[in-house]
Image (cartoon, rainbow, N blue to C red; front, side):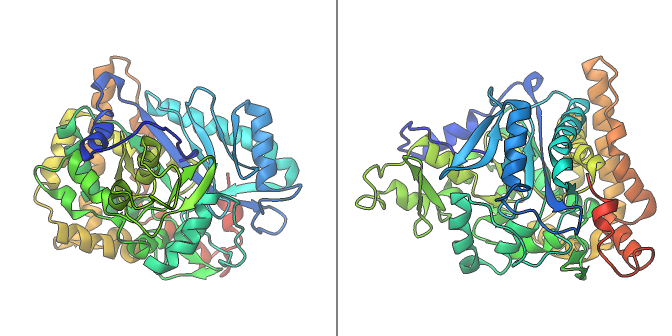
Length: 457
């Protein structure tokens, strides 16, 4: 999320909060695809991280992009920390360790998504090349220690950095040393939201396996294929993970609200200033917990929207659904991740098939798979056979869904080509992380340095 919200509309009841989510309902012809991708920023001279301040820096990249695109700067305590497209159709933001993120516009098809990513990266390279800067597509920082990793001057991240060590062992690594590709997808009704939420929660670990690309930490193999996936197992389990209540047959907006109300807050924003609220839940906030601490202590819609953005389940519900399981990766994967989920969730026949396949998957089975995948990837056991076998079925369903979209749209636009990186993984029976490890043990001669050349944007 690029810009924290300051909507002053009062909220007084749980129903108000559920109604806000339900406002995301839209007819199928208005469904869109919003893709987000993050990348590590490094100096080509020595593969070191790029700081925020300085002539060749993260802030210089943002200022250069602002001049080139005309997007509006987002300022926090006097520092540029992002850019917003003037009509609200996209944003550039910074993750805590300087990971550079594009939050794409809501687009109609995957060809537009790929074009958007291409244009963004081409423009960014124009700014970065004279500064000796390039970008790395991986799920985890392969070389830099936590101490070496820069910190961005962003107020919400200061609060999170203080809080994370209190609630999990890997929250700071999540913030500073991981990258992801996400896609945001729409729903037409509460029932449609429920179906998509349940299917995608069950399949999120499969996405983690298919997109695993974080096998190195601090210059050596870490024993995992998706370090990022493992990090999410103990970041802050009050606000992250599977959310088992979403598996209920009658799960709805109100259930998500009731859960969110009891998750500790991070902050509220008043007059541009961030106030640490990690000592209370949103329910306590609603009951007047900040009365006496803040003059403007009553909750508003901006507070609620910001709070929703600080929840980290494997699938996050806002007025759309965010698929959050995949590692970052090379350019082709920026298109493959949305293709995988669009094929599964945006065609009625494909959603029916995915729902039928996963209908009897239990919370316990999915949780066990979530624990196994970071180390074992597609070799993880699921119901007595490798996850690879089920992944083949699921990618096939996704492909049929994309073909059906082309027929339904009547334009013959083939989106199945964007599944090619997953076809390669399935054909080789090896993830990108396993490819990287094979190179490390072969041509790279036990060094991670070549990753900055082989997997750069």
